[in-house]
Image 1: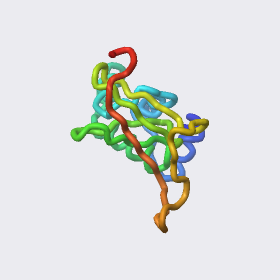
Image 2: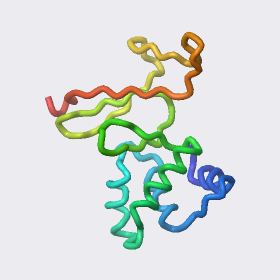
Image 3: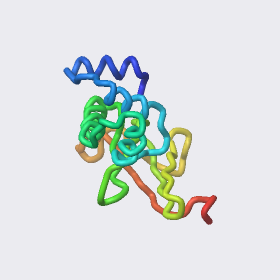
Image 4: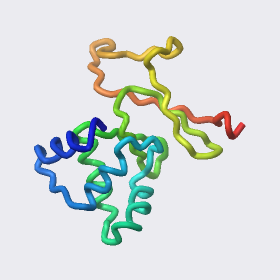
Length: 138
């Protein structure tokens, strides 16, 4: 996410109503590096906002993805995780602790990333998830 204010402006321009619950989801995601699922966000924010529904969390994340402020990650079959870092990068999932780590492409020569086009196919997003065991769990 760029900034809270700019995100709010983008959402308003899309006609998105900004309730206290939706603002809480946006604040929760701002700078979040844990790659939370909608269920985790709902569970944590519900303590402070007892009337917060799961659909509000899910729909807010969907709107944030629509305006390119978060990206959804297909790490598991049952649910999505969300990442406010929309720059192209690799996700490393540890099967031991369940943490998801970001590895940026910039400055690396061991990962070749197509930037614009491959054989006539225009690329608008790149997603790569590697699964294994982190250095702390080994």
